[in-house]
Length: 194
Image 1 (cartoon, one colour):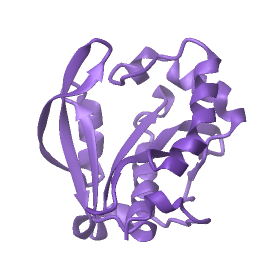
Image 2: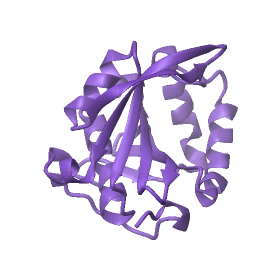
Image 3: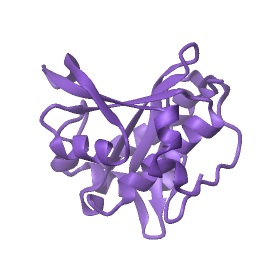
Image 4: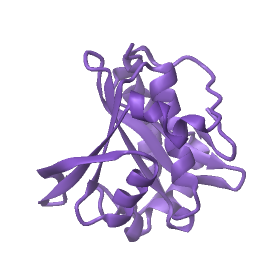
C-alpha cells in the first residue's frame, strides 16, 4: 500500500542490512522485548519468519519504505475476528523521528485496517516512560485509555504500558482518514475482520 510519500510492503531479504542498521541503535529498541540487533543475521531471521506469521494470523508486519530506503516497521497483531480489532505497532529508525514518517505510516496501516480489513478498533500501547511514543500516538488521533500494569516483558523486568485506542467513528473524522491510501493485493484471510 502506498501514500503520498511512503509505501508499506512486506519485508524482503534485501532489507536485512538496512533493518540491521536501524535496529542496532539501542535508542530505537530500548522499550522493546528484543534488540538492539547485534548482527545482520537477526534481521535476516526476522524477515524469514514473516510469511509464516502472516499466514498463521499471528502478525502482519510491513517495512515502511521511502525513495531514500526503509525507515522502519509497522504492522498488525493480536487480531480478534469476533471483536473486529487488532493492535498496531510501529518503530522508526532514529534519523526519521519527527519527520512525519510515523504519521503517514499510521495513516496507511489504519487505512488498511478500517477500509480493507473491516476493523472497528485499533489498539496501540507505549511504555509509561516513553513519552515520545505516547505523544506520537495522540498526535494522530489515538486516545489514551489507561495503564496496563506489568503488561510487557523487557528482559527480566515487567513494564507498565499506556494503552491507546482508535475506533472507527473517530478514525473516520480524523486527519488519518484524509490521507490518500492506495491498497493493492489481497490480505491474508486470517486478518480479514469483517
